[in-house]
Length: 371
Ligand code: DAH
Image 1 (cartoon, rainbow, N blue to C red):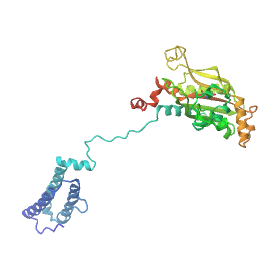
Image 2: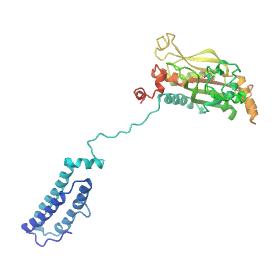
Image 3: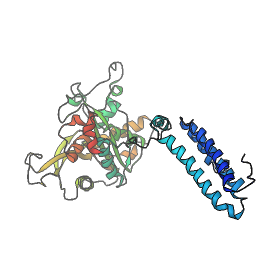
Image 4: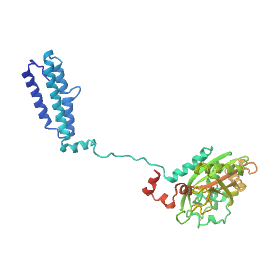
């Protein structure tokens, strides 16, 4: 409480303000914590209940006109004293710790939150998938632990095909008691998801299948026992090899740039007939020949072909077995194309990476180059 002034002559004013200044000084001696400083600030300068406001209300507002100026001068001086006391307290070295406890030491470097970015392999996989999504394809996925039926049998691999050997495929242990078709293995490619899709869905079908695959391979600069593929499948009436060529030519241009051209070479896969390997003109030399393309002007990138009728028959057979209409995959009525590509290989070409192991190393010096 501030009692009203009963006289406004200079010496009365001096006495009244001197008492307040003494109060400020004695309060100011106990400002050794951040909490005390805040309490002092509120006590003296608080907009509503502060003492300075009370002084203004009690004295300034009721002062006779001739006392306004001498009162105002002393009032402003008192305010400066209060502020100086507070500033002196916060800037004293002993108070730095208290300020830091409140988390407001503006001299410290900030704590930056660096956002993560997609791993270059995921980013490449998304880029490939994105190209086909724009063509109206949808995305399917399947299990990495697969059965012999989906990974091999339905894809027309004969029983003694070398890919089925433990030299190439990682088999799950203790499967001997099961019928051959149910034996578990780590999928060696994403192609089994083609079969799963056709058993579950009816044509027309346009799907891309990104995923992880496993092979019993030794790691070297271009091989890893675990790697990634993107598979594609298109099934409808009257799908031709021209559709396949046009689709993949477009996809390669979308991924590598519009000056890229494609070449289709006869090849063999058990699940396509005819089959082809697709090459793109070398993106480093434009086709004139360089070290990267081994002076051929071409880079081999993916496998593809027209879905083999034997695959449609296996799908029909499996659909019949599980009680679904088999006739919709009659190879006399429909046709399709399929393709499969390695994500690592594409990422290595796109980013000029010479060692596949860098993708799995977790080495930030490598990964930060993609941030
Ligand atoms: N599955 C093949 C592999 O892993 C890649 C492939 C080739 C997939 C031709 C296809 C295809 O769908 O038509 O080597």
